[in-house]
Image (cartoon, rainbow, N blue to C red; front, side, top):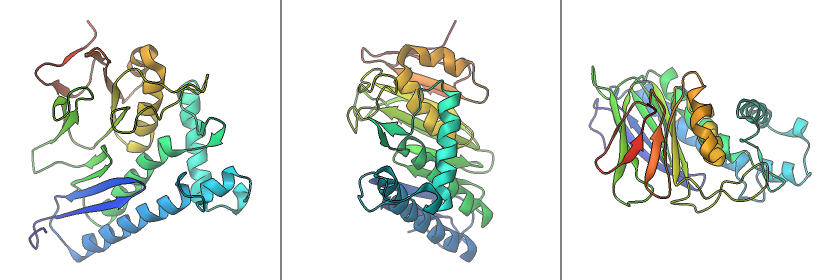
Length: 263
């Protein structure tokens, strides 16, 4: 529990994962109320978008039991964002999996970004909202001190492959370490098992999350694609321990990591 006036932390289970809130601003009633609203928002998103719940709006929409016009407005918002991500990635991001509606590759990042916005509107300008390892960071960890975020090594449990440093940024990682082969090649329908992980850093989590999913599916094509994007950087670790980073990746490789930036 945080001390009065010393910030606020909270952990919540939702959407099949763990969310954490680390608020570095002075604790106020407005921020406490906003935190409750942000938590309620995550549970609402779960009820609307979960593909594991047969009664969710997205599950019912996918089965044709409801029409899009009858869904909450955020469903249409997410599907429009998915279309934009699909276009930006050349089809490597898709809101369907094996022919079934599944926008979850974008939804978690979108939900976390919205939760961070709820906090910011209440006066919390220095926050870290973490949804299962995908983060939206606002402001700084402390005055003049940037956030430092360790990225887990996909091949060496308990070790880091890099530490990302910065302010006002979003970080998303896609891989198979925790959930197995859950990302599919949209062009073939086959599960993607290489590389081991891809981390993308941007400014806002909605597209950063979607782009991490797409970059993982791209495999070898991810590096030149990310190099051509404004405002996004990436790191990949391959199954053999080799890897790469884009030119401007804001991370410091940890000892034993063989990810190389382009010459």
